[in-house]
Length: 256
Image 1 (tube, rainbow, N blue to C red):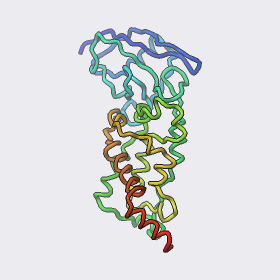
Image 2 (tube, rainbow, N blue to C red):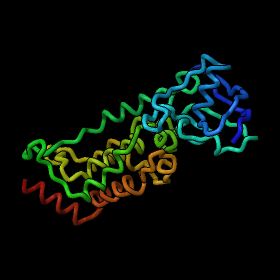
Image 3 (cartoon, rainbow, N blue to C red):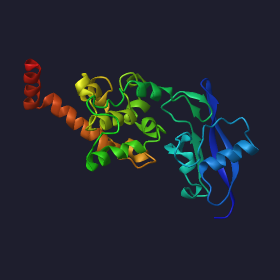
Image 4 (cartoon, rainbow, N blue to C red):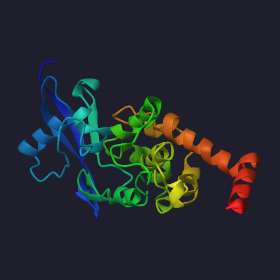
């Protein structure tokens, strides 16, 4: 692809308001959207605010919306778009705007702190943990998450309903709960922590209606809905509504 001039519409502004501003920027072969944003900074808008770090799709910093779709700008190639197309680049819509393409994602860190960490078994010495390979593989997929928060941004429970944020952790952190709940060495239940109950009552699992929009935008290809959220919902339903499970839990509590 030879060089050409591309038309961009980039959101400029802050928490008080802003607007889309038109630019024409030179594009070269093999470039990604973040390259064009950097060239725009260097040549036309030196005060343009954008968050980025690794430019390799591993830090999750350069999340934005390109033509309305949540993407990592460093992994979005210009060759995906027609040369005659005007590309619109806007900040993540689900989070408060700081300035230009930078948003305040502290909501996500607050939700992360609400999920209790992995609790190793007390009777097993560090370095002596043993797991079956299938258990390792089951949750290993979820550890590929780079916390770009694209799944949080596209989830309509967060994106379209600000009032839900207090009661809903979002797909990234429900996935974390699912990972810990399926971990055979997590001793949370022995410590009195029921991760399944917490998923439903504290992290808002019931708000998720498994539309798979989070899976569709994950740059790491994690099957968030199929492999984390649906299995977690199934385990919660078994615990809550299966009469035999309910009766067994009642008997267990009475014996204890």
